Image 1 (cartoon, one colour):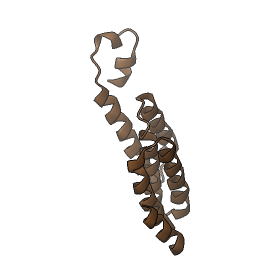
Image 2: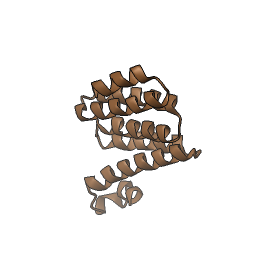
Image 3: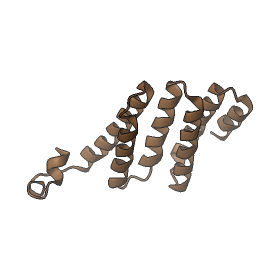
Image 4: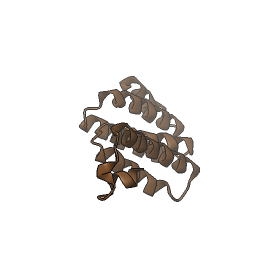
Length: 130
């Protein structure tokens, strides 16, 4: 549907709804997270596609959302240092885009990653910031 909707010949005759593009962006983010946690080779390209999708619909808070999903997936894959790096990137993205509702959530995720990395003092600081 998304291909046909953007096709120059058929697209003008097909009604498109913003929600379908929003849903596609969210689903790509969730799919990228699942592939990350499973260790699939497609994870990085799917993650990039999710970031492009949220960017194409102009959802600024979609970027920290996708990055937070990646951090959560890395934590689930028992890769706490990688999860921490992804969470730091998500926090910066949320701060830069003024997505205040994401900041506390990602800080809590950072705390979990720090706990998993056995960095208890830093984890406590992240939980307090959250």
